Image (cartoon, rainbow, N blue to C red; front, side, top):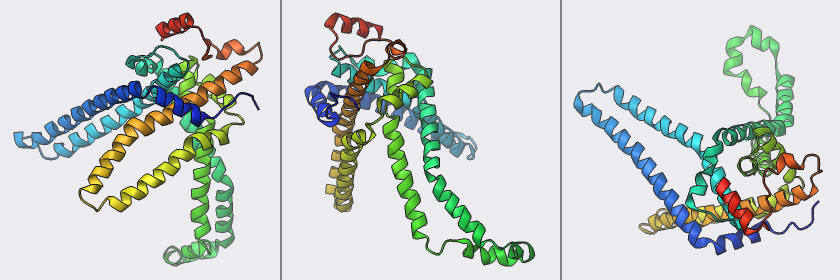
Length: 324
């Protein structure tokens, strides 16, 4: 479709390698912040447990713990999409050779509602799109149900119908009806993930409304969904399979199982997450720059709030950094 689109995986690896020390430090800071948040909720829960010894009724104990747990989940659900968008945008700035600092990870909070609403509608579209993928299979299952339904048995022998007859409504071979939905959901999930991968990032980078962010992302990924899957998702799927096999084989071997689990968590935190984000940033910058070059002049301003080429001069980059 466009010329000049290189390997997202290769450029992402180069970005990760060149900035490994800086990214390692930033991820360490994030880990310490996350640990502090978790410890805060843990201590709050312990205080809730200790209330049983101060004369508080026992029935308040599980209520306090459950409330704190849901508060933590809601807290992570609210700030997660915004923090991820800021984290990804830091990598985009690195590709464009702009100055970055740890505070850039939190830049998304300046555009909180735009990013969060974009994330919400992205999830809704992805879920609805997956249901549409499943619709033909659901129609076949419903047709099979109607074909075997015996209304006389249902209305005149209700007890027998509920205890025996409903078995006959099931397909003769359940295996296809179990495997097919799984494969369809898997394929649909990756399709929509590749199609709408950059919505939150575009909302922050281009200062777009949720509708424009989704529209923009849908357009820049046209013709490149397979390439995104092969460069981003497939390598980490294969890596995940290998790591899970190793974990399964060593989990009952003490202390090797604990050491392996710890190493894999460190690998995920300091290698896999930053490398994956580097690939996402490389894909976004390549696709968005190429798309901008092909935009008609009458709508170019709509999606180019600021110039996004990685070839900007240093003074322009510094001005952009101040704006962020």
